[in-house]
Amino acid sequence: MSFAQYMDIALYDESIGFYATNGRAGRRGDFLTSPEVGPLFGALLARRLDEEWFALGSPDTFVVVEFGAGPGTLARSIAFAAPECARALRYLMVERSAEQRAAHADHLEGWLGDLDAAGVDSFVRGVGPGPQFASSPNAPYGITGVVLANELLDNLAFDIVRHDGAGNFERLDVGHAEDGLEFVVVPTEVPTPLESVLSSAAPGEWMPLQVHATQWLAAAIDRVDRGVVIAIDYGATTAEIAARPEMGWLRTFAGQERGGHPLDDPGTCDITTDVAVDQLGTIARPSVLTTQRQFLERLGIVQLVEEGRQVWAEKASAPDVAALRARSRIGEAEALLEPGGLGDFVVLEWTV
Ligand SMILES: C[S@@+](CC[C@H](N)C(=O)[O-])C[C@H]1O[C@@H](n2cnc3c(N)ncnc32)[C@H](O)[C@@H]1O
Image (cartoon, rainbow, N blue to C red):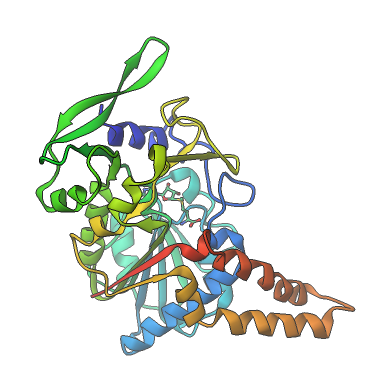
């Protein structure tokens, strides 16, 4: 099978897939993402949602579709931040794994349930005061609002290809070895729109071919009548990714540590890659491309941390929960802005 087929099974198969069994983001999970660092990321995303809501003329129904919501931590932080758009907010957590969706109800006031496709349609078109939250494996079309994905695209199944400099491509497939699985090199073709992007990598270097990520983006843009698609992830150009020594872009994680070879013990670790921003660009050029650091600074992270420092200074002798939360912003901001880490993630926005 192709590596993309293998990866889809290893991550999402209902009986053995990593995300269908135990795998998840979080401090007690397998890797730390920005929403799992603490509530500060959600507080800033809530500001971005408000910006968009105002830009759209404060519509009575403002839909946010968060893809790959994991255990629902970002939604909880956004709810806690109480953005101005809350009264219009219909926030749908689209998550492929039923195991992860089962966690969405926890500590989320206004959660209406795990919806089927028809339920999703009425959820995003219904009336009544917000904020309202719901979960589903299905996503709607025709929305006014925001499609959001934090660290989703790096988890969508990809293939592994290289070219020889003369327009010929090869792919790494997965085959049987005597004692497990092994990579097998086979000739392949690549989708025409991606051919020139892939050819920008040096000949002979393996690189990810992210067809599922580009298809996700095309569909995400289609889902929005008016609004914005925002994707946040670790990303680089295809040529930069391919240049990493020893396929350093193909990573596995389990229990907060780097895992082993992606073909060992399928289902026991996350499999991920840097997202090729130029492959996404073949669908539509982003309206905005910044680092996470620039994005969060623009939304006022520095002021929020300063406010936190002041609250802590006033209450340090007899701290309450609010004071502890205020102090925690300092460490959270360091993690979210860290050079070489979350701070260097890319934030891609496509205005529709
Ligand atoms: C790396 S986790 C990120 C979780 C969360 N967004 C965060 O930042 O902590 C990726 C999540 O995307 C989910 N996922 C993968 N493919 C998906 C798809 N096509 N639609 C919805 N969710 C998907 C996985 O099950 C997993 O929970």
